[in-house]
Image (cartoon, rainbow, N blue to C red; front, side, top):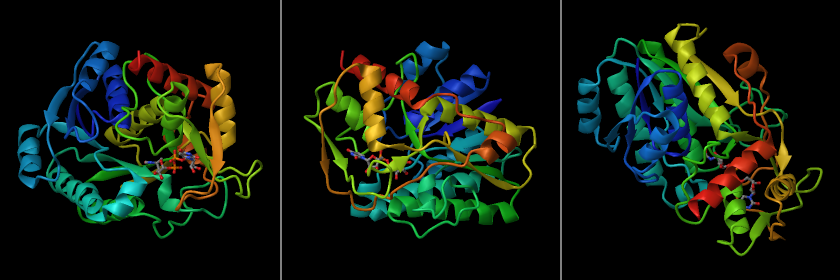
Length: 337
Ligand code: WQD
């Protein structure tokens, strides 16, 4: 069966392509290479022995999207990762985010609704919850007003998919990721370091390898056990596997509604200082860090209630925080060698 993965050469996309190929799916990866590299195809091939079909394409070009689905009209499902995802950048350049994250989604859905198997998996984010009142966070926690244009595009995307489901035969699953980290254990693919990392774990590994002088810890005055903010760090391979489980759910028509939502996390919250301590343990080296002021827009705590993902979707994260950090460190060392 042919599956289209948009953003298929990106961080989570490439790991999902590997897991799809491992399960015998034929994959067509679409990417505009704005935040990835064509060499990722070689890394995928080194892992699975098979290079996915690759189409360099910008999903903001409606005609290209139409032509693509005319050519690939035997698609059994689409997993949609392609989006800009830097919170800070989205504040500086909202129109880039609304055009890229919304227009592309609309154009893909317009073609998908004409297919005979309109199965759709949407890459969403726990950012839609804002600072949830109750921890761990369940899927029925209220969606808060977005704290950034990036988060707003995820909320709007979910609303578009829900509206479209009512009047088309598209079946969708919304996957709300917590904090994806780590890299494939082979170190053949991972998070490409383009620019100064905004996220915690790539900044940690780049500090440890000597690329950054020190890590700034954004605030230690949060109402948490050690004062630093808490997140649910999930291994990217666990996350990728969840996409295959979700896709199979739609392919076998096990979905209970036309739009289903699942939180993808480990269910465990870890503070910034706990991540640093765990990293020092797996890397065997001290990390140079300094506590500084809070980062604008950060929330105190977010970690997933995983009951629905475990019991309904039938998926559970397997990797520990240390496993994930060890894989991130192995990748950092590999790409700097
Ligand atoms: C984690 C914690 C920071 C960097 C964002 C998006 C989310 C998803 C993941 C896309 C926070 C602290 C960070 C640093 C630090 N992205 N930190 N020093 O903000 O939870 O989530 O990325 O899907 O949608 O919102 O992740 O890794 O940026 O931060 O102290 O140099 O680490 O304050 O507490 P975040 P993050």
